[in-house]
Image (cartoon, rainbow, N blue to C red):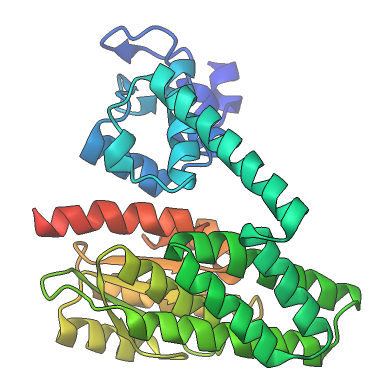
Amino acid sequence: MGIMLLMNDEERVVGAGIEGGKFGARHPIGVVSRRTGVSLHVLRAWERRYGVVEPARTAGGQRLYSDADIERLRLLRQVTDAGRNISQVSDLPVEDLRRLVVEDAQQAAAGAVVDRAGGNGTAGYVARSLAAAARLDGEAVHGTLMRAVVSLRPAEFLDEVLMPLLREVGERWHAGAFSPAQEHVVSVASRRVVTWLVDAYESPEDGPLLLVTTVAGEQHEFGALMVAVVALDAGWRVAYLGTSLPAAEIVKSARLLDVDGVALSLVNRDGVDEAVEEAAAVRAALPATVDVMVGGGGAAARRSRLEGHGVVVLATAQDLRDLLHIRGEGVRS
């Protein structure tokens, strides 16, 4: 008993009595999430909606996963990251998933060769945008990004062009290799392109509705705009309300519009504690059937607190796509 008292919750379940006699099931859900890269919320949704794995349970009802479960989930994470919907791959055997992962890796490697040889592909768009920004040619940056956005699927544009570009610009700015003016050139061009992309969508009249905004004090709009693009591409309608809305206004708008979800972008790491309270207030005031989700660097910095309030924290754009796909099917069914 003395040893058991020294263990944390995750350690305590290892070796506990397991209902159903599933041998090898010894990993608690938190460990599985960290090892596979699948967020807790998405993992639970994948299980409920698609039955991707069937974890054992302790006598107390806690999920335990086997090494085979972890491998399957890791493979599913890889193939969905490559652009497939979970509904298309959820029932594939592990051998087929492995083949898909190899195929995707080969295709990515082939694309990288083309990028290096001729400056084409997604890396070429990034390189040309950076070169144009270095000479403060905002129209060239805009033109390059527009060619990318009309040539690629939205997910490819966001994940392989825009986000890598913004990360590289941010790193160069922090290192002193890019001036504020060069950073602004990319920001302005990127916002023009994403705004155009949002306007280009025709939302289905019967699609679920997502309210997108930022909490009070959060003035960074770009993350919210990208959330809008991901949602539109997933077949959702979007009510985009700009930036810096107090929790009471978000709740009032969500009720008035009868939304199916609320997405809040939290980029700024300053004042993040106040932002957490705002997001928690939104979650507490809306019914459980309405998902309240937060993404961005500020959210990642307070993940445990947000999740403690019942807010879904999204680490990547793929997490958002997975959640919207699952929830969208639930709303339509």
